[in-house]
Image (cartoon, rainbow, N blue to C red; front, side, top):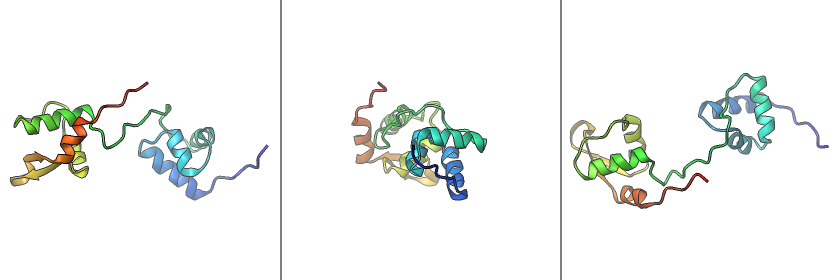
Length: 126
C-alpha cells in the first residue's frame, strides 16, 4: 500500500476553486494529481460540492445548440431565439466566431471560424 499524502492549504484552495468553476471529480483529480476518490473524500471533509458525475465535456471548438441557432439567426438577419443571452454571445465573441458590428454591440457578423464551428459534427454522448 502506498503512503498517504496529506492535503495542503493550497490544494484545498485549488479544489474549492475548481469545484466552484463546475469541474467534476475527474477533472479536479487530474489538476491536483490525486485520485478522483481522494478528491471526493476531501471535498466532503471541506463541505465542498462537486459535480457528481464525470460528464464528457464538449470540445470548445464545437458549437453548442444555442451557439448554432444564434449563428444561424445572425447569418439570416433574424433576432436571437429564446435562450440565447449575453453569456452565449460573449462566449462566441471570445471564441472568435462572431464580431460586433454597429453601435452598442447590437449587430454581429459571423466569422469564418464561426461557420466552421457550426460545420463540425456534434460528438455523440455514448
